[in-house]
Image (spheres, rainbow, N blue to C red):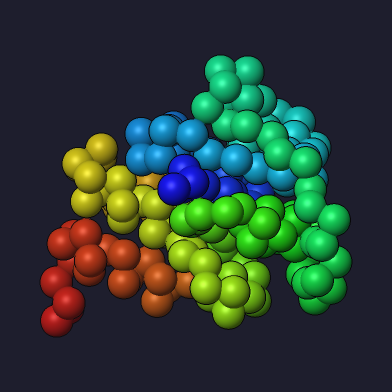
Length: 168
């Protein structure tokens, strides 16, 4: 059986770096993959969150850069990073998890039968794996930045993490 591939789009990488949680990816998944296009998109940020963290992770070898499959044009309604991420996941012969925040991209992933989660799901998984004591500090850092998560997503994650009362 093929190894489980975890392939990430740019948004979760940037968001996790903004929240100070980039290395949770390594703790949760061991290794992840990005396409060359996603790497270039994140690294184009220079010193902005995500760029230094991704460059370091690539150097350390726990993030590997994959060439983009030729059939990425199958998703013309997505940006290049999302399209190549999905194409890589589809081309993988075995189980795969896609890390993607954009709702249309997530819908395409699900339609292809792929497991998908986003930044909030990664934070919740880290909490459930006891890699962090709470998700609220990470969400608070995101709130102070220009990275946006909907109130409904924030509330749902805090409820699932047991950090707010669902009745409140």
